[in-house]
Length: 190
Ligand SMILES: Nc1nc2c(ncn2[C@@H]2O[C@H](COP(=O)(O)OP(=O)(O)O)[C@@H](O)[C@H]2O)c(=O)[nH]1
Ligand SMILES: [Mg+2]
Image (cartoon, rainbow, N blue to C red; front, side):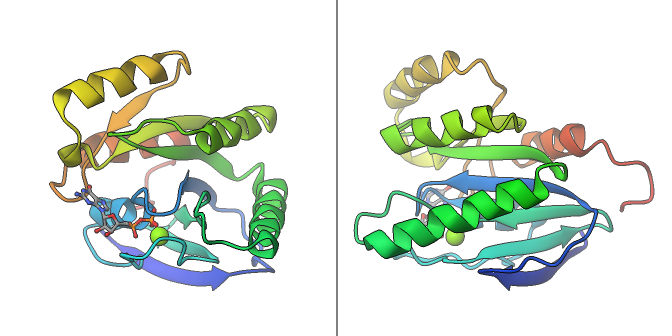
């Protein structure tokens, strides 16, 4: 699949009119790994230490879809100033790209499910009236019991759910299909 790194932004994001899908979630939930699994190449940086990505990274998929990797939230060691910077960056991003954002994929850990911060994030996305879907990550790490419990808790969001493992390459097709449904691109994109 053709994929190209477009840039890393902490402030000004160059304007364009391409459709975007965004990946949000706690630090370390597996955003970068999921993007890499999807495109089949290590384009996004995966880190063992949480809280590393401070910028918005954009990738062009085919000719007309953008994948957006945003900084994670909920990392305990982050200072108050960094948290404020995160909020400011995200507010600006959501405000500026509102019309272009075709889906926000909210990533949740299959083992732990939504945390309080995830709930706040989902509330925010709903408030902004952005379309969103839930993606469970690292399903290889969750037991069947843990997964069933998490699935029960997520039911109430009433949104489409995709279960993935970047490690085992699970859920790639479903995720791709979901992106295609969201962006509704015409032929010629690939
Ligand atoms: N077992 C397992 N580990 C994963 C999976 N996806 C990511 N990880 C690990 O989780 C850590 C954080 O991943 P990363 O993609 O950088 O998360 P991000 O901070 O959300 O971008 C890394 O050590 C990855 O190797 C997965 O599907 N299964
Ligand atoms: Mg990352």
